[in-house]
Length: 288
Image: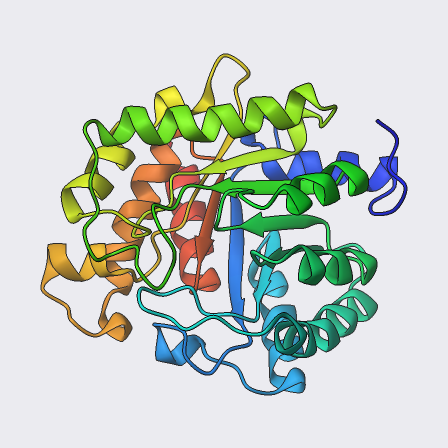
């Protein structure tokens, strides 16, 4: 399928290289850039365009492959944000980063097709949808743009997902749902190399569910070998395992999961602390 807007073919090849470790480009780190007043990690909250652009540029300088820009908190219990407000928050940041670094890879963290469209028109390369493409309009948009897409698993909504997570076999159910969505997208004409799957750690899961998903990730790739993303940075799972209630104290635990991801061949790591992750991964590479 030929894109009517969105990345050029040359740009899509760059996106593919930034998604998969199997292209010989090494590990990939995605820096979290929250343009929100209520994200769960207080230190990651950014309320000005200038600060956001400066922070994004620093993440690239520190070695991030991607900058993931979000204008709505999806922490457990979070209230939804009006799409127009979400666009107002993220669009100037996308435009500023794209102007400052035309070659840098940028993703938009949104559930809203209208937000995703505005972001793609402003130069975004990948749609990171925590709702897993539940909205048919988002599927149509991704197919139209032929951009990168991250499909995440979430049980329920951000407002309800942690009330009573329930699975018979969490790893199997999450894998099946992710692969069903990815395969439908592929059958509709979207290149599998532009698709990333995310088990959605902390999104409608108990601690036991989260551990199971990290330990049984192999089946999520499917026969197609889809790329995998882990987003565990400073989440409550780390707090439960370490006893650290404040997200500001969860960096060490987060780095432990990142080290596991590195050895397990996970393609992308979505993190708050880019410099620390790059340092650790560089050392692991040197000692391999």
